[in-house]
Image 1: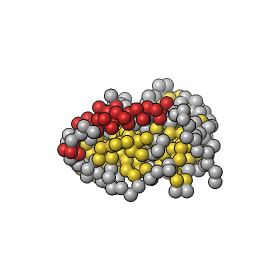
Image 2: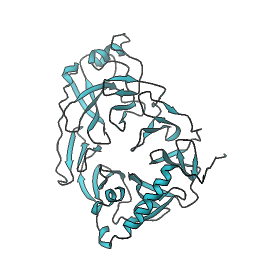
Image 3: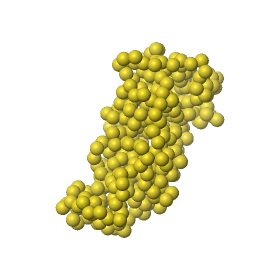
Amino acid sequence: MIYRVEMSRNLNPELYRILLIAVLLMSLTGQASSQDASQSPFLLAEDVQLFTPVSEKEVLFVDSSGEIRLVNIDHPLEPIEWLSDWDPRKLEWSETGRILYLSSSIDGERVCFAISVDTPGLEEVGPAPLAVVVSRSDGSGSTTVALAQNAGGGPQFSFGSDADLLYGYPFMPCGIKASDYIAYMSGETTGEQREFYTIIDLRDGSRLQGDLSLNSGYIDCPFSDLAAITNGGLLLAFACISADGSFIDSYDGSYMKVLDWVLPNGLLAEHEETQFLVLSDGSLLENTSEWLNIRCWVSGALYICSTGESCEVLLAGIDWECFEPVHGRILESFPREGHVISMPGSEGLLIADFDKLFYYPLLNGTSSSIME
């Protein structure tokens, strides 16, 4: 297999930005005292099946009973019931079941959840579908925007960066009422039946397809409108999530395994035990240094990372020309296991380990002060 590896002297502007921020990170972390690294994670919630942050202090999660709870980092282990004003009866649904998917917009203003719904007569035409509901993070303004199915690796739904677009799969090409679903599953044609689609414009409810296909899987970028189209975790293409759902055709496809999004226009991937930075313009940068482990892209140009077999976990910038952390700050007592995501505002991290959710504070406003 032959790879095209580009190490241009005319760096991508985004890479220049990374290096400039890295220099600032070096100067700031050099001033930190040893007591700054005394933080440790604390247990925030138990019995957590799904979760998503909605503010700098609040997290929504689904427990094993299938209900949504809200917990505040100032009141750990004291979750409260989260209520929405969604009423399934308005759409002829008589029963509701478990919540099977939960996500939020980047700004935390909107929440999407998928809940199983049922009504008499459904057992004659097929399994109960999922109602895809979008609401404000306080539970108000709840609207059913689509029906979906628990199939094909889904459900998975994500907001665009401005929260006006919701995309994902598998949306069902029918209306949102129980009668629409029964008619569709029975093979009847109704006025509400539509073509297959992958994007919903939440401003007017229009359903869009474009040339975007997500049914084989996708990994959305947390800080841009790009998504990596995948199949079994292997990169197939880049797509820009917009009203026309267009593909970016510059990536020629080497079937690399996607590891993490690390730039607004690039992701870390591996192939045959070699790491690459894959940019959406089609260029590749090969990692010739130690293996780079990214636990979390915190914000901007900051990462929770480590190198090789090192047990030291760093909050650091990364020089993407040599794939090396740039004089980061060591995070003491950082768990070696668990899925890590950043809270909005980047003053702390959420760490999910089995059904427990932990909060890890980043002291002294480190991340926000670096990015100012």
